[in-house]
Image 1 (cartoon, rainbow, N blue to C red):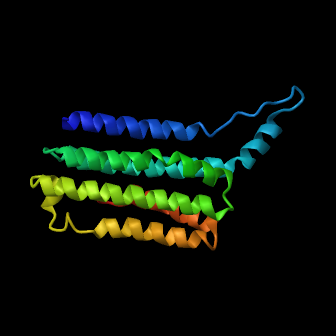
Image 2 (cartoon, one colour):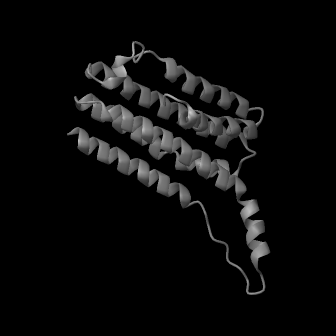
Image 3 (spheres, rainbow, N blue to C red):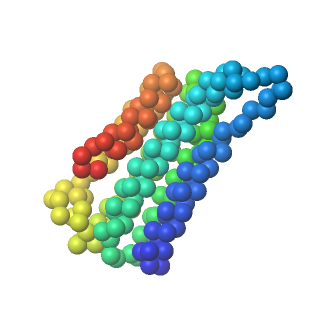
Length: 192
């Protein structure tokens, strides 16, 4: 498989997952006498669904940007790259389920814990792919940095998700806020 086909598959899967996220939104049916206020109340009631959508969409944007940058500099692809990429995409494709649970049941612990576990699996599988690609592509621009193969960013992402999972046992709302902070950090950081 060529790099272009692998990138196209990955872009397609991530785009489909982003699209699936929006399917959680249902348009309410109004009686003829009801008006705007009913829609406003329904929107406020669905605010946790909206917020979980925004968090997951931002998470997916970060994964897509990282994946794009990683593959852009890679020349050599082997069977292991395809398998590692497939595992990463499998976990990415699972994101809509805990997103929907978190939106529907934001005060319960399990949705927040599951969201964190899926985030850990996405992170672990991505970093396995990352390290494999850098090991097989000595000329990759990321290798210009002396610490490209270090676990500097790996531990940060994984540690924050582990902490957020722990926080979910005390307060799912704070855990969700931590999950929201992760993509915001990666979007605004200078060397992202």
